[in-house]
Image (cartoon, rainbow, N blue to C red; front, top):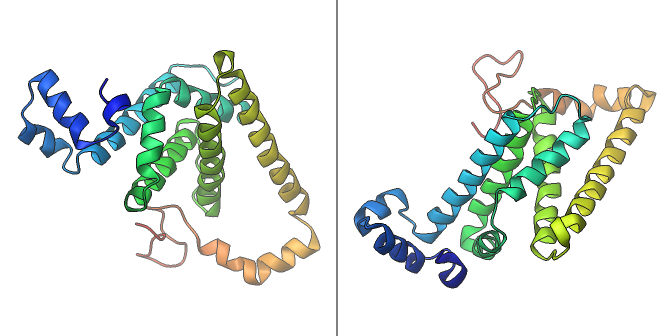
Length: 212
């Protein structure tokens, strides 16, 4: 309740301590960086709520692109627009940009994992990067959307996903062509070395993907 007035700040954390009777020392043990850790905890709580809702739903009848769109909608449904707006302002600051990128990447990853993604190669990265771009642009649109039921945002989201699907269709047509085979036999072989975090590289015992 204090965030709309004080932002994700030490002031808001101290006010929360007064409201709940929790000592400032105990609060600091959970949120050592104050407002930044408080904002990140709020974001992770939203991710957890999204995952719980998606796991309770039957999405099997949906096309996969519709499952992605639905997951993004659920993630925004469990968020408070003003709190997210304050969080965007906080994570836009240069010293907090890494935390903002991490939060975005983790949300995209959770969506893919919850929907059953099992990729372990370069697709693990490209899927998350693509969804991160779609999700972040949708959040920015949503923050300024005053349409009934956020209908304009959902239409915007559908357009962004349609754009991504067009790229995938082009990639599908390219695969199997002579030019594609030549590329993958030459410079494209580097993609065979890329693995998701925790997945060993074939032929390189003990080595794992970047970022582990």
